[in-house]
Image 1: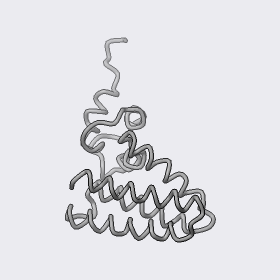
Image 2: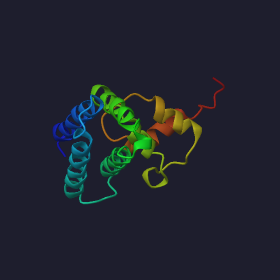
Image 3: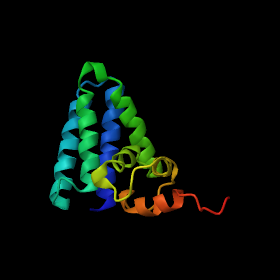
Image 4: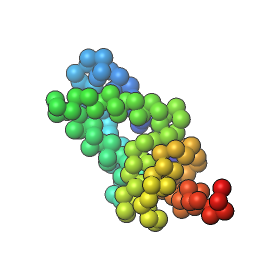
Length: 145
């Protein structure tokens, strides 16, 4: 998948969330429709519902749809903050959270792993592909230092 295309989906979603928070009633339903299209696009390209980038988009869509319920009216603001951080820094808290799920990791769940996932800087490639390296880096060296 071309990263530029993926970013366009997120940029359009950002614009729609800003419009929603500015008071345009039609923006949130359009954001939901756009993200349904994004999920479908990624499922077709990846050929799987379980591909990690598809999981991220499904989770995002679920949170976006949840925000249609009045009780969860604060969710679009959180999603917008997360998207802006993702677009500016390539740090995605949703992807890092989903990386903790058992089917997305090949290493045991531990506090050092959680700490590494939360604090490691963005880098090329999927966060899931870097878990083994992250766990190794998070482990004490055993030399007393």
